[in-house]
Image 1 (tube, rainbow, N blue to C red):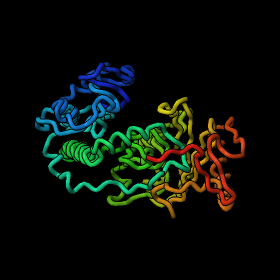
Image 2 (cartoon, one colour):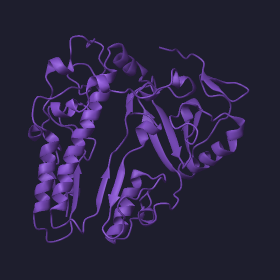
Image 3 (cartoon, rainbow, N blue to C red):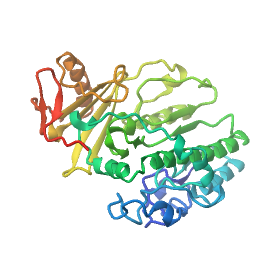
Length: 382
């Protein structure tokens, strides 16, 4: 019997106009409702999230949006995610006469990055360390259309506060997860329950001149993924192989002893659960960029060592060697010595998207010199 709660889908909840992507027919019950999928979220005071010392007239998202940060003047018990976890804890305390699936989605650390003061106190502003970044990092890469947002944060001296607020929100989410795990450990289901903890996307904190997500680089697409399967997994083991969130469905179907539906794109991760060093093929992520002047589609391939990205509309390719360049600072896709690597990753992409083509030549709006260095022709620093 499937039961769910909170932010499992990309839905919006009060105080904003509710939108829900929950499919009611798929759940026996959804908390608080299939149509309002998350409890009311208490906001930080206006003078905290719209401080007078910043330019709120040009603020990304405008006033009344949810791209805000700052401490909330309530205790944990008043937070929406606390109520979602409370509901899940109650479910774990009940007697269930047949196997159940429990999906529990916390809103945090999604923005708004507004959580109780005690979580901010763990990260004093004077101790905040900003991420290491490279000046003009987008000169050899795709312009995601969000540089102005990062520029607003920097010019309004909010960068440290954004990082602080995100760290506080992560710690709040960890606390809520801890409450859920505590209930599981104390329940009758601790020894026969498959546990999966994951996030839907990563987060830029200034890397690649971006705040938030909306890219195909590592900072957006790499997520936490933890699994505990009684009798299968060994505590403390890790796997460094590339996997996809599409792999969760076939993995859970296998572990539950059912036959996989034919339409699944993912593959089972059971081999990695039993042997973490078992190799996996590269994984693909696609995204449509809408912050650009015109929508642009991109496709990324992540292999064990490399990240390859292709933007067909602008004929731009990117390649990053994670052994040498973990920050993805240097696009080496046009280096002559890397053409075989690029071709291998093209083939991985084309296996999933057979109609995809490559035009050859320099990408639109970029120039490539004789040494394979690619640069945007009208790039403007700030």
